[in-house]
Every structure is written in C-alpha cells, then in structure tokens.
Length: 76
Image (cartoon, helix red, strand yellow):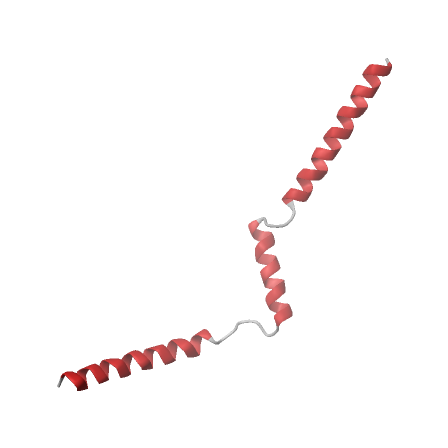
C-alpha cells in the first residue's frame, strides 16, 4: 500500500517536472542577436548606460568654465 502511493506521488512529481522542463526550454527570441538587442534595451531602460557619460561631460565642462573664469580674473 505504502509503496504504491509513494510510486504514484513520485510519478506525479516526475510528470509535473517534465511539463515544467518543456515550458522552460521555450525561448521568445528568434536569434541571439534579437536577445542581445532586447537585453541592451532593458539595460538602457534601467539606466545602466548613459547617465555616467553625461555626468562626466558636464563635470569636464564645469571645470573648463571654472578655469577660464580663474584665468580671466588673474589676467584682469
């Protein structure tokens, strides 16, 4: 009795695992290039790319303006 109920539950667990494995292998992307494009788009939306570059450019511009102001005040 115990052996048959355990065997039935093991079989049910195996069947559920097989169904999950079949759905886990499905991929919504047609190619790796499509996957990479979606990955980069998701990272851009999350803010991974871009803001640091803009901050660096703004910092460089602010330093250049400060140096010009200092140069003109020293020469005046």
